[in-house]
Length: 167
Image (cartoon, rainbow, N blue to C red; front, side):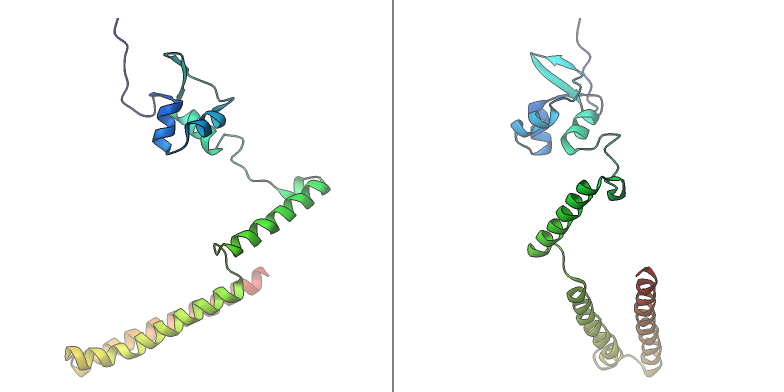
């Protein structure tokens, strides 16, 4: 009797080699991460897995593991270790430029805002000079630019107010 072969990835059975190829991982890494995961069966002497089970095992997403650690529920020595490791993680991310200190972030945003405001301020003049826009259209563009600039200023003010409330 012929075996029923599914082409739906969710119901297919995946070997360690197929999973390694599909996820671009080393076969040994896949094998190690799948250790302890329930196999759906054995084909040609090798364990095969359902994709959902394998993905949870490979990427650490089990039903119970979806929650993050709550430091308030840890014992004092574990809490200390948790915060030390978080501090080290943040320091490392800063060193490799994946994270930037708040003052540097604000300075970069200020540079961006200055360039944006300068370009917005000169836009009506450029449209009049380069595109031959009539004075009534230039006036309308100037009004729109002023509205955008005011909206940006309001957003910055409200962001500062929200930050002060949360502090």
